[in-house]
Image 1 (cartoon, rainbow over the protein chains, first blue to last red):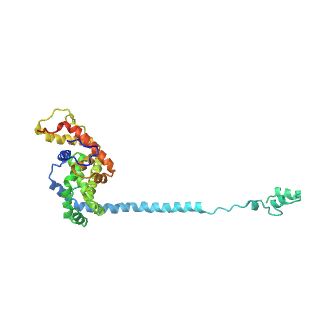
Image 2: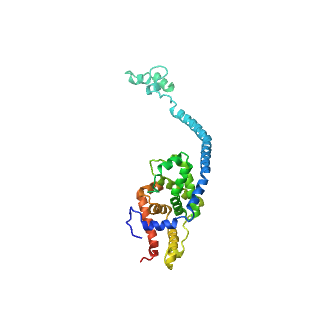
Length: 125
Length: 184
């Protein structure tokens, strides 16, 4: 058998013929064809049944998976998209329920009345 | 190549449910399919079972066949996969130990026995190769498929096919080097 280059793109006829002889089936070719064709109808019948079975086997798990995905999606969406309570502004948070607010006390030119300051500390609301 | 010939009309008829047309395709590709399966499985009976599986699998998949592509590589891919599946199911790796006399270095048989011994030796040498390498060299050197077609059959890059064929050839030639029939 002749040497070939590493990536020879041509088949080696000598090696090919030897391999063919080694692998050629001994039995009658026509007997094999008959054997295959004897299964022709069975193969087509079997092919149609498993398809339906596979689809049927997927049906229930598929429904369950879809339902679970819907529930999870709903819960996740509700958690993520639910509006959070708006944060109050600093001024609004610090504004007393009654009387002048903190800003008014800080900005006033006259010193604050002590009773007012104490009142704001003791009763912030 | 790939079992060349006007397959288009036969395939079209087979897809349409023409049993006779499918039978002609089986007849046309039987030798090829059985050889490829035997390269994978070693045992001729197992190989015939796998080749039959391949043909019947192709029958039920005919609607998926793209008629713009050559039929041979498509069919051989199915047959080769059927053989691989059967080998896996059998769970026996066909790397049966070679008899010392087959590996080389044994006494040389007389000329009359060389041909039959050559077949044994080649099968044993093939069995030593990884499965993909076996398929590649048989598809290339025996069945005449191109590297590109074999790449499609085996689902590997074309460069890998070239490499597999090269390594397989080198292995087979090394083993067979001293077994050539005497030439005059």
